[in-house]
Image (cartoon, helix red, strand yellow):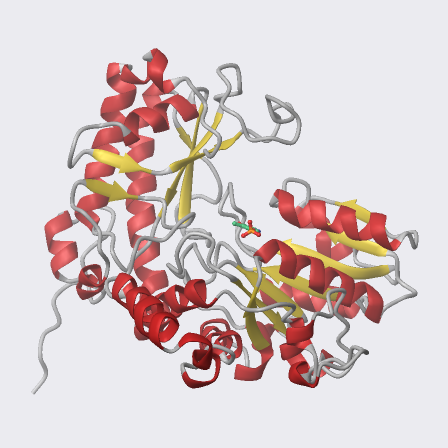
Length: 446
Ligand SMILES: *Cc1c(COP(=O)(O)O)cnc(C)c1O
């Protein structure tokens, strides 16, 4: 007997309640301590608290640290945590378990892989990236060039020209898989193949795609990758980051930070550095045990989800948001940027507005059950940071133009949340409430 299948719901037009009822990922919402008072659209910047993370940290603090004391390095799995959690993240990115380790921050891991790639190809002097890439990626290339002092150069070309620009002088191509502002998505396999065809290596910064979509580093034959623990992996503020190096590079892998935890025999206390085998050498110092414990809860939760379902729901949610924002907010000067509906893109939606910062503050400040939390990213043409050089300060004359960024995180967002958020955006824009002076003061973290 054949059963008649119900007609699939159209995520752009169907009723939100019906879409939520048919959502296979809906049960995951209960796995987060998330209040219904806010619509949280910033999980691409700081994932919310997974249920059980606070308990887990309490156990690590009270029992493992409080009672186990230093014995816990051996008895509670502390010293293996960077490789253990790395092996779990490997399953999310198409890597072998021994190709990923969790250590330090994404920025520090970028420093390591940039140096590793340049050391492996001393005859090549060019590092290729795109203008407008995430700043830390570009800054760390600059600092590697400065400190090495070997005549390397950073070349920035628009993304469409990257493949053609790879040549026999290109040592490393360093790109962000999903652009933090526009959500543009690279074809990882195609760009990797173009880099390899020129004999160059490639590093993918996965910060905005890790945990948001299926990734297959080894199918693409990527050389290096780094990625954030506190964004879509829900690992908590300041969670340590992942770093991937393809096994074929392990034997010759050089780190610019050969610390004792990445030594072949840390507790032999030898005078001379000898690298640990493989990816383990990209550890430097003592791992942050509390942060790793929180990250592991987030990673374990992500491993329960089917990333293909996550990507499909992300698409349905974000296209609904994009269509509704375009239809209702366009008249007030709001414009959805990045790849249009129907095109591949990352899991956040950016909406440009001349006062995007103030509009976002007004959205966040809306009363209970209406507060919509996203973030703001300054327009790329804006002048260098306002305020005292090198410090993060509040400033009333800092630029307000840019994008409102809305992260689409399918494990806990509902179609009804997207509809409520769009209603809020439309109302804030239509009423002009964002023009109140209190929404114009730019805070240190936007
Ligand atoms: C968020 C993000 C980072 C963050 O780096 P940290 O060292 O954690 O501050 C790096 N790269 C990209 C592309 C990001 O989106």
